[in-house]
Structures are given as C-alpha cells and as structure tokens.
Amino acid sequence: MSGSAVIDRYYRHIFTAHTELLDVIRTLGLEDRLVFKKAAMAYYSRGKIYPLNSAIDLLRFRPLTLAERLRVGISTSTLILKRDWRAFDGVTAAALLKKRCGNRGYARFWEPLLKNKFGTHSSEVSATWLWDRLQSRTRGRLGRSSGALGYLRGGFGLLFERLEAEIVRHGGRIMTGHPVSAIEKAGPNGSFILNGDTASPFHACIVTLPLPRFAEIVPALPRDYREQLARIEYSHSVCMILRLQEPLSPHYWINVGDENVPFAVIVEHTNWMGGDDPGGQHLVYLSRYCDCGDDFAWRTPDAELLDVYCGHLRRMFANFRDSHVLGFHVNRDLHTQPIFKAHFSRVLPPFATPIKNLFLVDSSQFYPRSRCMNTSFTLAREFNLYRWGREARS
Image: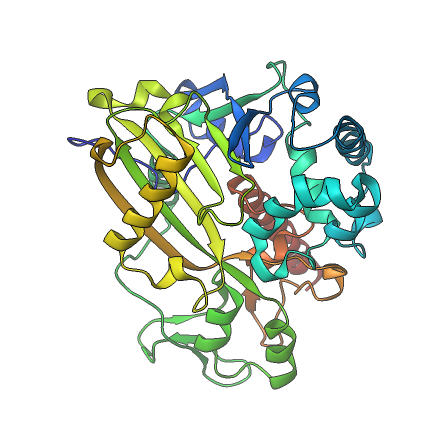
C-alpha cells in the first residue's frame, strides 16, 4: 500500500471454527483488533462470474444442469455431515466427487478447482483434504452469521509481533539473520551443533522446515528415513499483490474454474476489509500453486508475469485497464503446501526422528487438517502435549 501501511504477503482470513487461533488472539490481547464480516464469494466459469454464497446461488450456476447442481449441493452437504475423516483417508477426492456428482458435474465444477490447487497431482489428492476444507467453513459459528470471516485490523504481523514480545518476556531469545545450514550432533548422546558452532550447543532441536529442507541440513539422517520423507511431495506458490485504482468486482473471493487462466483465485481484500485501505487503493491477490521448474509462473520475470496477468484480467473484467495498476509485488515460495494423497496417514511422519532429541514439526503433519494458521497453532499444542508426556515417562 502507500505510506507506512503494512500488508500481509499472502491473503489471510479466519474461520469461526479456528478456535485455536482465536484463543491465541484473545490471550495476546488482540481481540479488539479482530473483526468478523461477511465476505462475498464467487466462481469464474466459462467466461462469466457467478456469485456462490448460498444454496440459491448454486441453483443458479448455469454451467451445470439443474440435476448436476442438485448433485453438487447434496454431495457437499453429505461431506459436511460426516464427522470422521478416516472414512475418506483411502479415497481420492476425484473418485469421490465423480461418483457423487457425475463425470460432467465433476469436470465442470470440481476438477478445475483441484487442478488449480494441485496441478498434476489433482487426481491423487485424498478426499480427506476436501472434507476438512468443507468442515472448517461450517463448524464453530460462535454466534456469528453464516459467511462471516475474521481478520486482524492492521494485518497478521501484529500477531507475530505480540508473540515475539511474549516469548522474550518469558526469557526466550529469538535470533534473526542467522540461517541454519547444518545440524550435527557431537556423538550419540552429545549436544546439537548448528553450523559447526561448538560455542552454541543445544540439548534438543525442533525443526519446523519443510521436509526437503530438513533432509538437506541434517546429514546424519538414516537413508530409509530420508526415503520415507521423500515420498511426500509439495506444491509451490506464486502470489501477485496488485494495488489498483479501481476495484475489479464486488466480490472478496473468486475461484477461477478455467485452466487457461494462470491464477487460481482472485482475492479482493479491500472489498471485505476496506477500512485498512489508505488513499482509496484497492488491494488484490492473484494466487496459484504450481510445480517448481515446469510452471511458467515460477520462472517468468515479475514484470512479464504482470503483463500476462493483466491480459487475463482485461478479458475477465470489462472495466479493468492496465492503467489501474498503481503497483505490484510477486511472492514465490518453495514447498508451500504438502500434497495429501490417498492413504496419507500411512506416510505421516511422527514428531520423533531417528536421532535422539531431534524433533520434526512440519506442515506435512497437519493431516488430516488443511494448511492454515489455525492448524499451525493446533500442531504446536499437540507437540507440547507430546513432549510433556514423553518427559513424564522418562
């Protein structure tokens, strides 16, 4: 944005079911910054944007026949009513949705979304992933109206600043600007040494890096364990932030159901939280997931990527002009999202690694839950409970 305003590098919102995150926000004294508002959703399909906020909107979704709309709605409701993720662990989302919505209903509604999310792995993703996505949107309304999403005024950077202050206040020390390139151990029962610095030994290490990076920096990991971790694959992310002079649409979130469009979702933050928008600028995120090395979005220079994206925006929104772009920024991240394939529970890595007092706490362990900030806090709590129980037994 302009001036000294700070924005999140990636779009963020809170569901009312995100009780772990909401508890952290309250504990840190940030509840006065928390705002829940309705957010307008839509789906771009076959050259047109369709509002998609209710059952009535789904019944008006013209790319599907009436029978297909009913099957999509009924199958979604059935998934929401199921409470045990284990029923879906060994089934792919593609197979389940084809069975319940029909091949054409799947191809017109669900398949573009799965392909935009998981690319070449879209047909392998566990139905558990879909189940949790639907569950998180319908549980824990906390008295708020349906369709309400939460946000911290001023951005989620406030949350991490407050967390850092609490850690320091309790005697913790946070070191920035000290990248870890190697973790080694001085003997079977010795201390951990980071980057060969024997002056700073550690009794235990908790690594929160993605699995490929974890395997790189710990050379002593056994071969069979490395092979187990290598079976888990990741998607990478490309997210462009646009500052626009004019809005694109009245919607907060538009899923793009067109494989020819090089971004999977359009998130107009200021259509939802306009109060954070100084100077009348409109903040838009254009995001997608991809495979590193074989996706043009990963390799294309930023300015060229903007030209390509603007070309698609002109076709999608009649009022959009390139001159509306006041500024842009592109974020690219490796190993953003682990790909939860069918039977993922069989390859889920435990907290304990083969090396004594070396622990792994990684997004691959989110399963069966979706990747989001709430799940990060949930996993941290679960690890603490694991450590307390482990120490009590020793």
